[in-house]
Image (cartoon, one colour):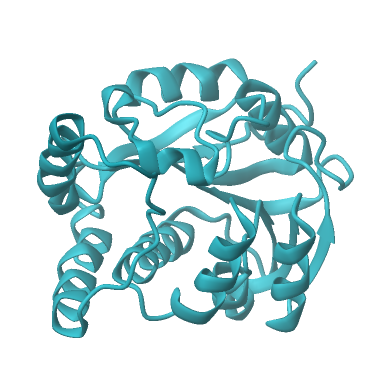
Length: 251
């Protein structure tokens, strides 16, 4: 992301519907699938952004985080989270260190080798540990605004599943999410093709308060829905995968 996106996120993501809803979904899945233990979970956020999700995860265990961008590290530390510089292509932690790894909207970036990153997440997880990963969906939906967040590609569910399995993971759950957002984004996508805006617009823009509250409620309801079924379409994909207990690393 660009520098200004980090600053905007730090100041606004705790209220913005997109982050509110996605964080609830991620936390709900961790609570459901994380290994049970008498000890606090050891949790890693890979690509922590400004650290809000890491902060929200602190009640569930000991949280470590890392990011490639110095501003992200600074802001994450400001939230009271232990953060360091590092790349998902070469995770800066020892093998078999964590019960839970989360990676939200990270592996699709241009500078990331997604298959290498998934293998690194596998490496640092303890046997029986889980990875919760979110990526943007729909390859055909790459927009001008994606340039601001350095998008390499979007995914479909089958492709993400193949990459996760190749890294050695067992898939516990995989679903599209943010379904309500897909129709308006499709409309905007095709309008942009017709109108051809002169300059790229950051995807991070203010939302009117009442609309923001309504979207927060509606999108957050997916955390409940996902307990019972998988969604057939959406703006993103979330997957919960497990490292087999029978092996510690993947060669």
